[in-house]
Image (cartoon, rainbow, N blue to C red):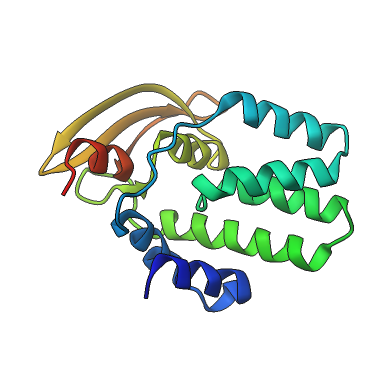
Length: 179
């Protein structure tokens, strides 16, 4: 199935979607977007959400999702705007898509070694996963290992306990090693 078909399936019924396949299809499609995160647009989206400008937030989230369709944060922010505008059904679908995307990352490996890294699309997704795990990055070392870009991250939790996690960053791999 094509990326567009898989994404449509996710929107229609997230509970039956293979989010790992969806992520792979996004990476494999011809000429994947290499869009840079527009920090000003994200700040504007935060402002619209904070001021309860639900329609404006939805418009901007939809625009950003055109180039970042698998961005978990955008899906969650879109869900917040939908819920704020009273569309709980669509908000729940967006949350289910975000959860499915996160579960795909968390089931991709255990992150305990470079042989079993957590597979993320980009560094922003890596930071999101660390935040959700209650960890912060202390130090990071990105390097190529066996044709894969592996980020070895020393993390710390709120009590100061350190732990090393390994991530396989897929998008930089596509930029550096185009087919």
